[in-house]
Length: 115
Length: 113
Image (cartoon, rainbow over all chains, first blue to last red; front, side):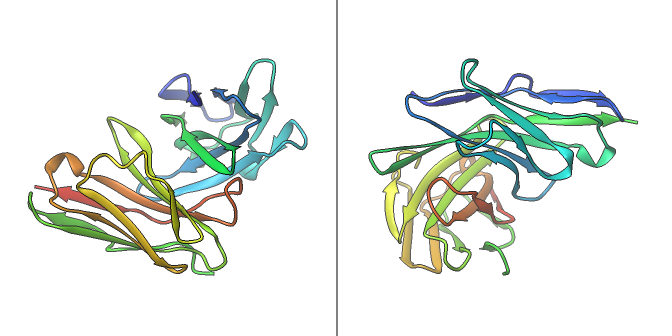
């Protein structure tokens, strides 16, 4: 069965520190992987996506993620946290099997940035 | 482009009442998704459409929920009768294809008293 696991529902970092949000997935077919960000009282916005091209994907706001097939991971990183990064982050996997799309979102990780 | 448009902006209703949520996807997008978000269950995919046809409704919680897409520019999610446990934020999203980026609407917070 397809699944997404985000380790840590809450992560706190100091401003300027490294941000690391973890995402592991399982799927029986090659996945498309996404990271979305949700600011309070808003819908989700795309940060970045992996669609079988380069394994290191760069997104908006200085975020990047690396697809590691052997580890079934797609962790999100940012070298230096900014106060404006405080939000909830969702990892998602989409697969296509027999013409049907299977969409699975993780449970989300709330990022707190401490001044 | 105006993005995905959802209405109403918020909804408060009493248990037993019918609730209709509306969504206008981005023009040219062939896929439309309905999600529900709660603190307890996170973000859940309820149903998605491809070219106005429902493809996967396995996430619809029960028969009280129904969704339609009469044309490429409009979809509804209906709850009849509504119950307090239906309280959540309901999001609509659209994408060009099944593997492409989904663009989310602002959501409709629903409170059933």
